[in-house]
Length: 499
Image 1 (tube, rainbow, N blue to C red):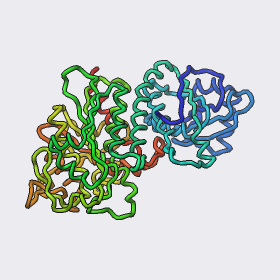
Image 2 (image 1 turned 180 degrees about the vertical axis):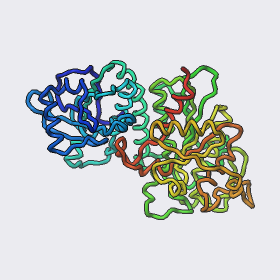
Image 3 (image 1 turned 90 degrees about the vertical axis):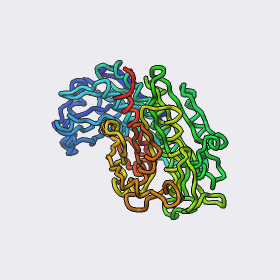
Image 4 (image 1 turned 60 degrees about the vertical axis):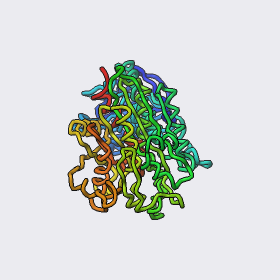
């Protein structure tokens, strides 16, 4: 599923075609494998060109040279690794993404070798993950492409050359599965809402059955039987009916409680009767980024045959203004039996999550629940677009999520949950109201969700800043980053997968 890239593995040595990529630190010393691949003519050229081009080999820098006679390559691509300190903390996915960007649309041999270090199989696998993620592009609706775009979209072929190449190739299988999951999530986020309707989203999630995932799709009649009045209220202004999709991967021991991931899937959020301003409303096609991350995570775990039991559940709705829309001052009854006074119809995601969370904890008795939602603009004000907000009732779970985010570069910051935030959503007319006002908006939203969590470890990730309009990086050039797939996969891999 990773667009436009093929990756092979080979031992260190000479011979081949296409570009030749080597790595150097700021001392410009080449590793033995790189010297062998270049030959003396290539080694001499790198040394001379670095001086004439003032190439300092800083981290994330590159020098591209025509290959001299005697070197089996079209071009030499010399990638800088920086200082000794830089080389001691290499971010392998970022290095893979940067390298793939320098040879996009071409064939290249990549010599993963430099003095004082050797790429381990896990490092090489992470390198391939970054390369695959960098190759992603969403341009299926462009009928006329610029020549440079066509060149960039041409297939890229990388051959990674390193000691232990067979072990690295085996390790890269799991990385490819994660890349596929991220790609799926990105595709879902980037799709326009006239294509990705609730029904279509449910259909695409149902394709996970091909990987052995059990999928159940709840339609409105079944939701009414279950009493999902909060979710149904959000959907009633749209001509497109809602869906709830429950996905189950049973890769762990039989009878073991599953882990549960729950995603907000608002395929388009107009704000409803409390309609948003026109500026930027087009971004609201991405208000289902949490649901996309859950589907992508299930895809990754099932593809790599993760030894864990997982429930993934997503509530899919469209929030539109209409004569049938729910209104400010309406009171709706959630599946839990708790009543909600609607203050603002644009605070809809928490209503969707309330019913799905209640259903999952009652039906599947998970060992913990994590929900992901592009929930509040307030979290963007607090943390910007590079860090997600983390709210939790469990210190161990929160710590593990934070650690997983540090490893993969999907950062979270723990936010407070105190009684004052819960009090702010008390209602005069119902059990609660769906917004606590402008101040502390991300925290009062989390307090609302917490009222639907019983005695279960739970974490809420507010991904409004990171889930769409994503910050560009060496591993992401997409509007939708598919944020959360790598974090959840790492969390499962490190703590919940049977060994």
